[in-house]
Image (cartoon, rainbow, N blue to C red; front, side, top):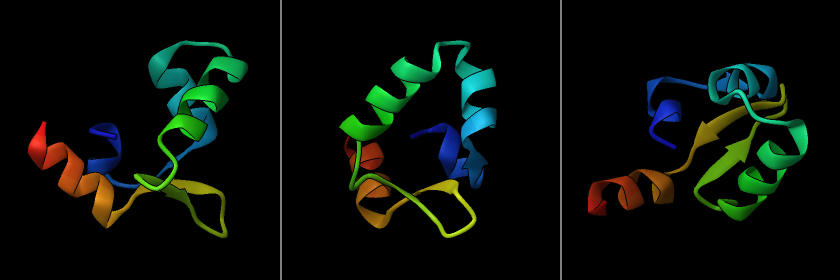
Length: 57
């Protein structure tokens, strides 16, 4: 989520950044639903709730 504070990212950008398999990335993105969202252009963004969670951490 910290990475998404910088701005929206595509799935490919996230995949390249973390250097993990597509299955693992999909799994982890599904685990943090509500903290991130996918917009109509299929870019991932952090939500207001995600920003609040990062403040707590």
